Length: 160
Image (cartoon, rainbow, N blue to C red; front, side, top):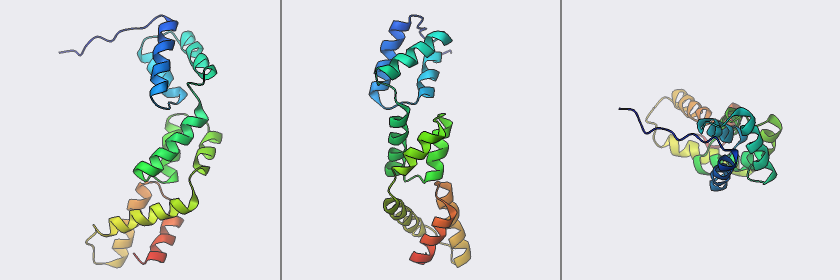
């Protein structure tokens, strides 16, 4: 009934090699790597040593991760800045790097993405009452992580 037994890694050299391939596959935050090393059963002092070696070898870079995360979530999932910021905070990325990552999102592209998102959603809402319709659109966009004042601007400009 139990799943397969997890293999424990106690040798830091083997853990470093596995962690390098784990980081080479895609950008990772330090916390993701730390959690993975704990899952593998490595000792806490060895974990910090492996993480510092990954940083020195440029396998792990929090700023690069934050920028890639922000770019990916915005372009692929059309997330707003608020939701991206929450996701980065969850991965324990420092606030300074979160701000840098959010600055990489172009303001015009951001406005266009929100407009496209609201237009697409407006086509699916069958509500006849204009106030209720606007409210539903606003709630939807806020759930996607967009700022309330920007949502209001887009709704006014596009008469949605």
